[in-house]
Picture (cartoon, rainbow, N blue to C red):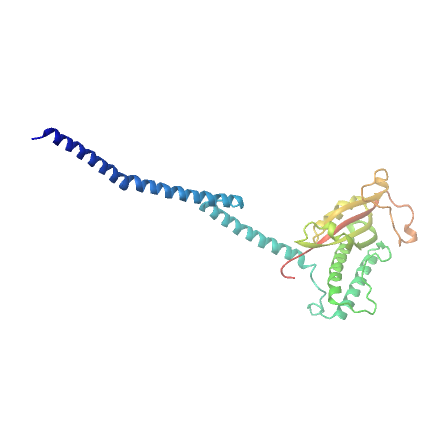
Length: 289
C-alpha cells in the first residue's frame, strides 16, 4: 500500500474542496452582497443627484407632519382672507351706493340722477347756512352739468365724491367742533398714485379740507374722522393761527377766508385757527363691484 500517495491525494482533495467552497461562497454570498451594494450605491447616487437638483431649484424636503401643518395654516389663511374681504366690502358699501328714488330703489336714469345730485348739493349748502357757518365761493366742489346729461362712467366717480362731501359737511356741522368757516373741499386727482402704496387692494380719492375752528376742538375733529362710516386716512394736518405764529407746522398755509361776512372780518379770537387736512378715502377693489 502506497501510503504517501494516499496522503498526497487527500491533500489535493482538501485543496480542491477548499477551492470549491471558496467559489461557492463567493457565488452564493460575496457576489450577491457586492451586487446589492453596487445597486445600493447606484440608488444612492441617483437619490443624491435628485436632491442636488431639488436644492438647485430651491425646493425643500418636508416630512408628512410639516405638510399637514402647512395645510392647516393655509386653511386658516384662507379663512382670514375671506373675513378680510367681507370687512372691506362692508367698509366700501357706502361709497358704492347710488342715489335712491322715493321708493328706495337705485336711480338708473341719468337725467333723474343729475336732478337728485343738484338737489343733494343744495341741501348740504342749506345745512351749512342754517348752522351759520360762513363758506367761500365754490366751497363745495360739485359738478355743474348745465344742459349736459352725464353718462354712467361720469356719474360713478362723481357719486363717490358726493358721499365724501356729504360726510365731511356732516362732520363740520357738529356744534361741538365750533367750526365757523368752511374754506373748501377740494379733490386732488393728481395725487392718487403718491397716496396709494396698495394699488392691488384699493384706489384712492384724495382731498383737502380747509376750515377755521376753535383749536380746543381739533382732537374732536380728528376723532370724527376716525369714527366715520367712510374709511378716511389722514396724511397731514396743517394749522395756522395766533397760537402758533412763532412755530408754523409743516404743511400749514396762510389763512384764506374769502366769503366771510363783513361783520366777521375783524380781529378774531386767538383760539381760532385755520386747519388744512390732507386725506384720502380708499376705494376698495372687491369682488362684488
